[in-house]
Length: 112
Image 1 (cartoon, rainbow, N blue to C red):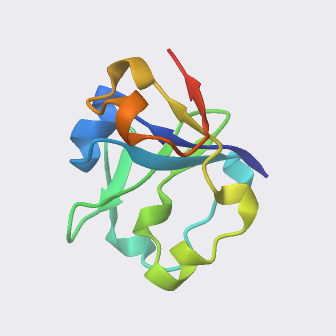
Image 2 (tube, one colour):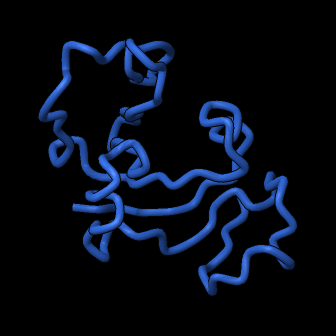
Image 3 (cartoon, one colour):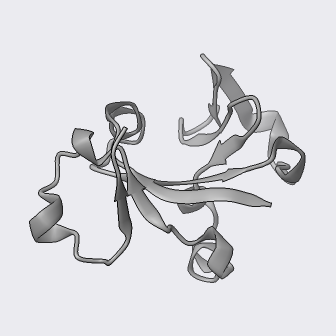
């Protein structure tokens, strides 16, 4: 079950992913599974990442697990079911982008 799929603009995500915004999907922990490469995953401060390249893979957050679709293979990224596509921008008050000028995608904006 997808609980939420968003573009996050918070400082923590921007720093962790070296990007002005980042897509995150939240699912119930029981609906999340690493199917390949488990032995490569390392963790630090609740963030799970690839031990070889450093890419963030997922964050367990108690009642939900956040994962990052851009870490999936490109074919998978471009063919995600509709429920995994972002529905809003979150933490836009922390954005480094001019949301009025460059983000005209019609998605809802959420503050805080």
